[in-house]
Image 1: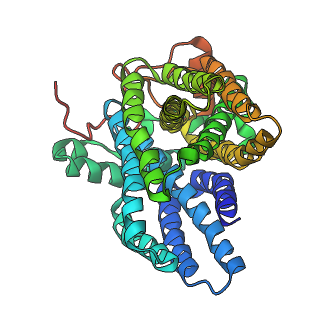
Image 2: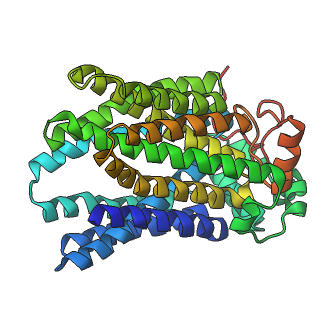
Length: 413
């Protein structure tokens, strides 16, 4: 029950915090989520009753959701296009390494309350050093805070050894470089903007299917992997170890082939191996475990692609709203997955058919999404409609991204 409520908090956070981030800023919501995680985790460790513990778990789920959404968005909006994939990959592997370290910490601290406290206290430190993180300059400009954006751009440029370039940029230059985006920016947006226009609506429906199916199949298989017959600490290590090669392959295909191909291939491959496993005899346990591991790894690669591809397709004005809405569908999938698992009590192969079938169908729907490899980030809904309808998205190496004319990092041949 506590874990289900934690996932429910994750879902609520996806709905609320994504929208608030588009209104109040990525950095503000990131800091708020980190503080909420520290406080809720600490209070959860000292809870005097189970209902109170569940309450703090709901808040912890909301906090984790806010941290993930805003971390990815800050990466997407700050890191230059050619280095963006590396930054996202680093974050994905930090998640995996954290999952590998957790069993060791839990094994050394068997007391549940103390473990909860030890895992929560570091977030106070994270909250303090995150004040150093700059707000998204792109978001600042789109919200009529050009002077603040200018200071942030100059600060980052100086940090990267670009002092001369930092002095050359002015507020007038920044406004002129984003004149079209500022002119078309109507100021207020909400979740309904995800469905108002044809191209954004198509993207949203496809994204809903992909995020739901990825999470749905991922957590469905995670339950199945617990049938290894080994202790809980080793299971956690297996979960983390499987993701390492899977994410590496996903990174290579995302970088050199494209986001859309990676999304399609990872989901369809996961669906196929899940369905194949239905026909493998139960006495061939090694084969069944191997196929299940391949499926879980493919879904891990799909998850890694989801965040990057979704963030690159939505415009700045509704980027966090879109990613938050997509994340909501993932949480729904995680909540529904265990329920579908119960249908195996009547016919053992039904859950695997549903998990595999959903993955294949959503993988096929990814073909309808635009490719975003090496393309300029869109800033407005009109920008998305124009570029994807014409099939001519501006390339990052041809047209510089608005607000990024200063080379914020050292360019090497």
